[in-house]
Image 1 (cartoon, rainbow, N blue to C red):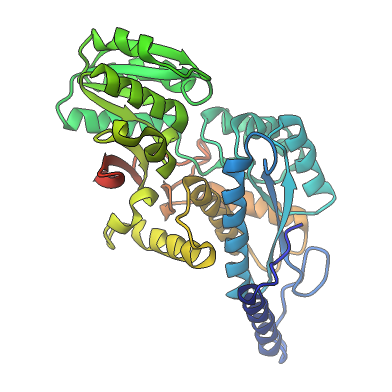
Image 2 (tube, rainbow, N blue to C red; image 1 turned 120 degrees about the horizontal axis):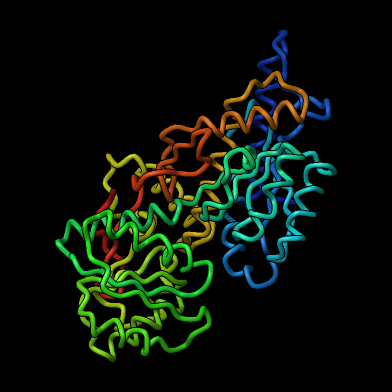
Length: 409
């Protein structure tokens, strides 16, 4: 279970929660009804389950997400909670294992009586929850962006994701390429979850944009030298090369291309979206483009952009609390819990049954419309429980060792 820190800042938040609850009680002393918990106690917290790989291979990505969830829950509770009730996180470590994720999801629902679950962060874990979510009827807002997490719709009634689909990132890349007048497109992707879906979808999408696919190369997910693949692609003289892989392999691609004098523009996708891409690639990533979240350039997003206030609030809260710059994984967790809490906030506070509340949260999530987040502008439908369209995505350029906003959608 998540526990609040005992720092001075944590004590202030705890005091704010107590004051907020006293105000609710005082306001209702003359006869209004105080919301009761699903266990029958007045003011009992809404319990939200969290599934994250806090140990194992996913730990480095999951821990910033965990901190974001903690911060969001504490702030929400300190500001009066939801329907006057605190928000309590019940955190389970999946270790990055799909079977363990399923077991912990069952435990959170059956034993911990959570009303919704946020996470997990990997595709294999999220897909493992899909059939179980139908049985346990508890909504899951996963932080994994492949379509098989939320499809087919009939089998994913309780599954949602806050990560823009790879198809939308591809569409953003191709939209920008066409706007720049680039016609000859090459693909370089890793043979893993980061690259396979893109490698399969891109050829048809490139043709649909009226562009020409001149080369398509794949490298092993653990490769440490992509010179052979780049040499083959260089002979095709592409205007732009779309690179689909994680940050480290993409940085290696950039270094290899720099040495080769590779032609055209390197255009990595969101898997490389983070400051570590610049750190890993050094001078070799200068001038490369990146399809990534606006969060990476939050200070450059105009105030009239729907995501502007959300980004400013998130980045400011994170920097005040932790003294660092947040990562995309932290932003994704923030969006996931925000969508869940807002759905909970829109439910009837008179509901007293856990299953009633779970079903109500599911129904409200499915009707999410135009909600700005840090990574996207969210609209869900019964046919698709994930963000659609390129609204909220950005094209970013590496310039002088920092990210600069090139194009916001």
